[in-house]
Amino acid sequence: MNRTLLLLGTSFAALYLSGWPADPWLRLILKVIPTLCLAAWVWRDARPPMLRPMGIGFLLCALGDLLLAWPTADLFVFGLAAFLVGHILFIVAFLRTGRGMRPGLSAPFVAWAVGAAAWVLPNAGEMAGPVVAYIAVICTMMWRAAARMPQAGALLCFAGAVSFGVSDSMIAINRFITPLPAERLLVMLTYWGGLALIAAGVIRGGERD
Image (cartoon, rainbow, N blue to C red):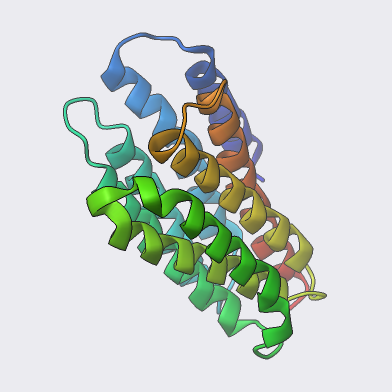
């Protein structure tokens, strides 16, 4: 990754996680910049056929960051929609370089989806429909990342996809079930870490084309 992007992204991530500054609008900016740095890395170094869907997917994740943390309104459902479309684009990118459907690999992710839905839905209320759709899409994204192995960079993409799934699972638990200790730290580290691994995997795979 370009050193400038790496330094910028990690610096703003550290500031955000430190809790400084207190102003919610400044914190919103801090939250988005690390994702935008990763998006810039993908746009700069990724290659077709994954470049466009991955690049747009990363930008939609940045939009989701904005909407989920909007200081003056609860825009959770819109943030969820941005991330959902972003995951669909990740799926498109993974399918373009996949190794067949490999349905046997879907079993753990079907179990993840069923377990998550059974746990979260009783408390989701009117959000039940969007939550089910999101769970289905992100679990499909993890499956398609797994299905690319053992291609170059595929293990990094898979690890990143699972880290992203863990991050979103913690958000769902914190919002619909019970508050988690150190929720912001855990969610953001697994989220940014997941995106960084996906980006690194996509770019490493492109180098071997």
